[in-house]
Every structure is written in structure tokens, then in C-alpha cells.
Length: 588
Image 1 (cartoon, rainbow, N blue to C red):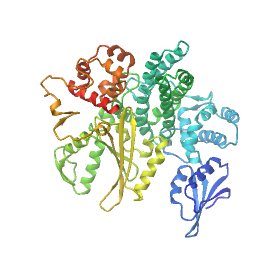
Image 2 (spheres, helix red, strand yellow):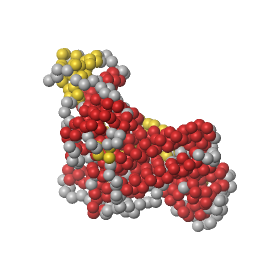
Image 3 (tube, rainbow, N blue to C red):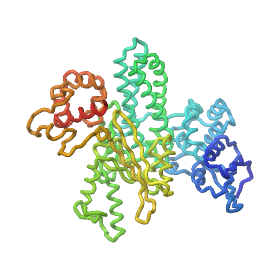
Image 4 (cartoon, rainbow, N blue to C red):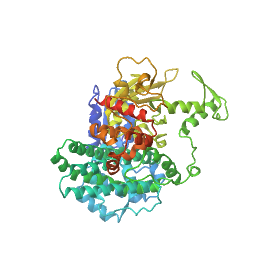
């Protein structure tokens, strides 16, 4: 039933492009005891889910087949959200906090008034209480964009009353690892502050920015591991809001590094205060809200599962932490693609096979006969990364390959695909799914240049034999080498060289190349002439990750030969030379 409040009317008949923007603006400007009245020439089904997610009830009036009136009203009461099932909170206190926050965000009171009201209403607010209030905001028309933009204002309302207990955890616990990384990042910031007080030394700044650049690993593990675990408990604000804040930090670090490399010293130095502030701000939000809330929401089993996949992504400025928990506690099988096995078992049971197949049992697939082990091996050895999202927008599978372009971890399985992307790209993801689901398109392709590589990405609609939409298959590949190919290659080729140019594996003969690179060539000499080779080697194998350490690289650059480097990375000498030569040619 339509409520007796003031409604803002938006006549969307005949409108298409600007209609959504009008709705978004109306939500942002909505006052207390106001709702939104939409008039459309068809029933606006797409709006229902969006408005419900933003905290609105609806009442529909059908005037005719070509005129619908829908009244959207903000929900009046705090409804129990999923996150609340895992936290013990005082609902009266939460309601009081919410009233003050909403009054401020809607422009009904000033920041100073909000701070005063909060201090006189509550003695203290825990990180968990703060987090659950952030989650409730979406029920009252506060968008994720607005929340990201005004997060610092919101935190200021709680100045002096937001408390979080000192976290004491054993080494190896995923939350302890995040805290250790924060401490290591702060050490880098401390060195940067000291360097700002003295003479400008480019090499020293380069070393510090190489260290600070490792913060991307911190972000990647947080986004792929911690965020997915929190989403399973109904706490999706970190992935929707903090992801944007993380990207802002990443962008400003890259901007500063670009200035440094371009010898724009003054522009670089002017940017340092903002870099320091943004990185510290990000870490404070993690320490005061994200990590304490994660400790309360997640279980021992969750953390053990998380730790099992953390190594795959890596760590920021710290050594690999010790193991935490054991497989029995996690309650998971050792296979990395366990979810795939479960899905296959369900299919088999549906067709009358009561038990899951053994590793070596032969199955009839669409074009052949394969065992479960062979299926997994095929996925593992494909020279292309695969990810599959089902018809319900849930990530169900990714291929576990050694050459993966972007990091993945088991935590992504079962996650809504919208939460696996920063907010800036969610609209694109949703548009692809919408067009595929509606049958308007079957394919979308993208390509990008990143770190000296050319990455090709293609999305395909997955449909069953009846043409029903069953999901989206993403295929991603580093095609840098493929783009560099010319002419014909009709003879057997190993790696980047023709057979007649490459010696037999056990001959000990060296590969000749136009750059004069041999097994005795010093790695520092190559990087001096071709700086991108350093990042290329880091991306080539996890065993080269220590090259990121500027101090370590500086030490080894003048003495480590290609022969020594290849042994470290597990490559044949000629194989590594071929790869380096191929990368140099691709970059020319």
C-alpha cells in the first residue's frame, strides 16, 4: 500500500539514457519522509532489485498496459541483515547511531552537530558496530559511491569514540599477516618522510618506490581472499567501498613513480604528502574497522582456508609466514579444484550414478572419454586462463595454471562476480551479463597493455542445447609473443627459436642472438640496457620475486650471470636466453 508521505515524481516515459541518472540523483537528494514516484510506459522490472538493494519498498499501480506508476518508499525500520547473524550487537544502540549518521548524510544536521550528538549519545563505538552500521546504510538509499566519497567525514563523526582492541595473534594467522605488512609499509613511509627532509636522491627514491609498489600484493590478497570471506557473512562493504580506496592508492603511487622516472622532480616531491596521507589513511581503516570486524565475523575454519591460498598470491614486504591450522580444521579436500569435483559429482548423481567417480574412472564427455584426473590436467596446462560464472552471477570455476595473468585464489569460488571487480568496472560487467542473458550478444572482447605485456580478454555467453543462458566464460591470455610473430614457421620449434638455430638439449652449445646475450652475461648489464627485463623476469617465475627487492638486486646485479639466474628460476640457460631475447624484440 502507498504510504502517506511526500513523493518526488519522475516521469520516465520515452526516456532511456538519462532515466537511471535521474533516479540516482533523486535518491541522493531524498529527505526524511520522502519517497520516489516513477511513471513508465512499461513495468520497470529492472528497477525493483536495484531499489530494494538501496533500501526501498515498492507499491505498484497499473493504469494501463502502457502506463505504470511505482511508489518507492525508504524502509522505516532496521531490518536484520545477514551480517547481524554473526555479531552480537545492541540493536537500540545501532538504531541510535544510524539515526545520527542518516541525518548528517541527508544534510539535516552539520558535521559538528553530528559529532556532538554521537558523543552525547554513546560512550564508545566498536569496530564491529561501526561496520554493521555501514552495511545498513545501503538499506536507506546511501549508495556505495557516496559512501566511498564521504568515508572520511563519516569517520570524523566518531572521532574519539571509535575504539578497537589491540589484536594479539600468532604468526601465520591471516589477520596477523595483514598487520605485519602494515607495519612493514609504515617503515617504508618513515624512510620516505626522512628522505623528504634532505637532498633529492633519485636512486634512493627509486628503491623506496620499488618497495612501496609491493602494496599491490597486499591489495590483491585482501581483495581475493579477505573480501570474499567477509561477503559470505553478509559484509560486502569492504569489496564495494575499500576496493575503490585501494585503487586510488595504487593510482597515486603509479603517478608518483611516473614523475620520478620522467625526471619531473618538483612534481614528484609535491605529490609525496598526498601519497603518504592516502597510504596511511588506508592502513588506519584496515586496523580500526576491517581487520577487527573480520576477526569477529570469521571462524577458525575460515582463516585456515584463507591461509591455504595466501601463498599463491604472495606477500608485501615480509617473508612468507608460517603455516596456520591444518587441512582437517579447514574441512576441505587437498585438490585445488575441489569445487569442480563436487559439481561433477552432483551431475553424476542426477543421472543415476550414486557415488563420485574415482580419479582414474573413465567418463563420457561431449567429445571423448576422460578421467577426472585428465580433466583437471587439461585445465591446468591450457595456455589460457579460464573463469566460469554461472547463470546466477556466481563464480564457479577458474583454471589453476602456472602462467596466470592475474592472481586468483580458492576464495573466489562461490562469490558474486560483481564483488570480484572494483566498483568502477561493475557497470561493464553487469552490462555484459545483461546483454548475454537477453540474447543480444554472445561475445565481448577487450585488450590492454600492462607491464610490457599485451593481454587479450574475451567473454563468451554459455548456452545449453536449448539456447538457455547458463553463464559467462572468461578467457584471458598474454599474447605478447603471438603479436610479435611474422612470416611462416613450418619447422619444429622449441620456444622462440627455430630448430636449426637451437642446439640439442645436452649439447652445451649456446644460443646466438643479435644482442650478444650468453650464459656469462651479467643480469645488471641487460637491465641497464633494457630496464623492462627486470619486471619481465619477476612475472616469468615466482622464484624471481626477490628481484623486486632493490637492495638485493643492487647486490646481485653486478655479479649474477644468466647461468646463475636460470638455475635459480628452474630454466635451461638457452630457454631463459630465448625468453629474454623474445621480450626485447616484443618491446622494440
